[in-house]
Image 1 (spheres, rainbow, N blue to C red):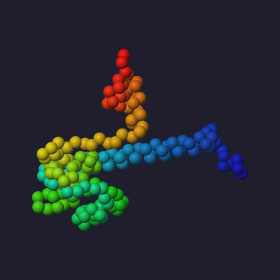
Image 2 (cartoon, helix red, strand yellow):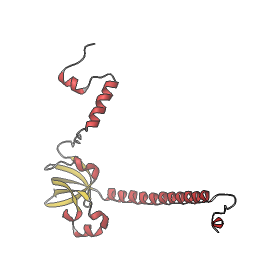
Image 3 (spheres, rainbow, N blue to C red):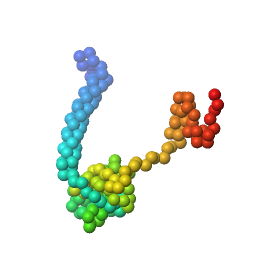
Image 4 (tube, rainbow, N blue to C red):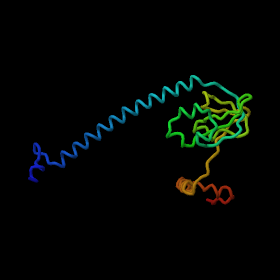
Length: 179
């Protein structure tokens, strides 16, 4: 009776049939995911195009900027109702700015959040309540350099030694090797 279950089909063993089925299912899943990814990418490109078409240049005074949850941000209720439930718990970059006579909370793009200076006037491209880009009104905006980790410092020293240069600390202290 047990031998009936494990009878090879067309001379192919059972484990080989199972592995072929698994491979076919994985290939089908990969094709489905790539089609779904293309669809999502097309939707994102369309929404980005719409944002760019609706964008306008605004001069604003940045009062405060923080990463906070949507329900704590002070955004209008209609915005909270339209966001998906899984996004409501995430922290997003919020900028409180004075645009004209009104103080408004605005959602900022992650890429430019660090560039926005606090308590300074900037010129921004805004689409609705979304800040897309920022330029300094009176000064240039500079991105602050992030603090180097210990590993990055060591890698820089090793790279400097390999290239035959002196390390940055030795240059600062004035101790150079005489050749």
